[in-house]
Length: 81
Image (cartoon, rainbow, N blue to C red; front, side):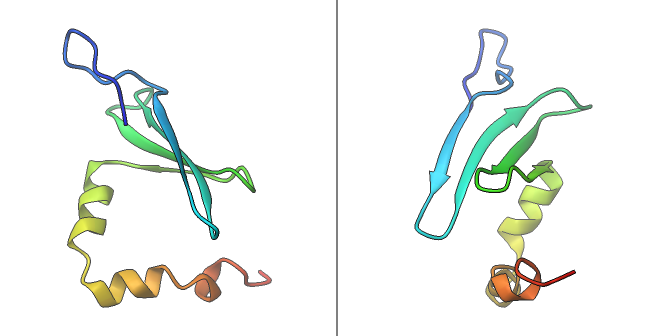
């Protein structure tokens, strides 16, 4: 996903598109904060979320039931709030 320069640091802004019939997300590496983080942008709405290493590792270690619960779009995404 990210390109790495000669010093071993990832280049900010590099990434790609991850899409399906349900979602269209731009993924890039952001290095403007205290440390590198993943920048995710919903290409339909423009909404952006940044995930650091701890947040990404948490997703990896989530039990399947918790991840399934997070992926339920009726839980938060399409609510009238």
